Image (tube, rainbow, N blue to C red):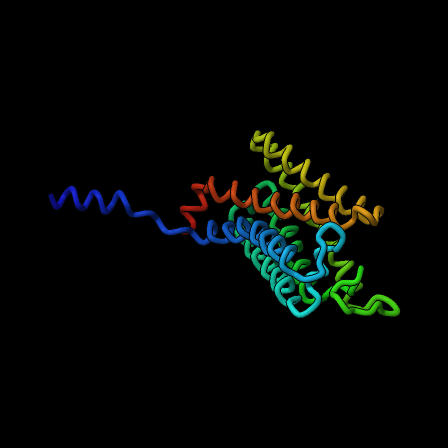
Length: 230
C-alpha cells in the first residue's frame, strides 16, 4: 500500500519550470495579454472608435494610464523573453540577433508607453488640436516605426532558424508575418481611411507571431539547456 502511494506521489509530481522556460513563458503571454487589454478598452472607452482611432490614442484621457501600462508591461515581458531566447539559442543559429531584436522590440514598447502620442481625430473627447506635434508625440511616432521594423527583422531571423531545423511551416509563418506586418504599417500610413484598422491588424499579426515563437520554443525544451539549468 505504501509503495502504491509513493508511486502515485512520484507520478503526480511535475518538475519545476527552468529559468529559461519561465522567461520564454513571458514572451508567450506578452502578445495575447496586450491585444486582450486593447480589445477591452476598444469597447469601454467613451468616444473611442477602433475603426477610426489609432490604438495609441488609448494612452490619452482619464484612463490613458491603462494603455501606458499595457505598452510598458508588454515591453518588459519581451525583454525577459529576449533573455530566455539568449539562454535557449545562443550561440547557435538565431542565438544572437534573435534575442537582440526581440529585446529592441521590447525596449521600443517601453518607450512608446512612456512617451504618449498627441490627441487626434477628436479623441480624447474635449481635446483641442495643438499647433504642432509635441516632443513626446514625435518620439512615440518614431518609436512605433522602430517597433514594427525591428519586430519584422526578428521574425526574418527566425525564418532562418526554422529552415535550419527543417520546420518549413514555421519558417513560412514567420516570413508571412514579417511581410504582412510591414505592409500593414506602411500601407496604413498612406491610406488615412484604413490607417487605424491596418495598423491594428499589423499589431495582431506581429505581436502574436512573436508570442507563437515563444510558445513553440517553450513546448519543445532543449535537453542541453535543461542540463545547464539543473
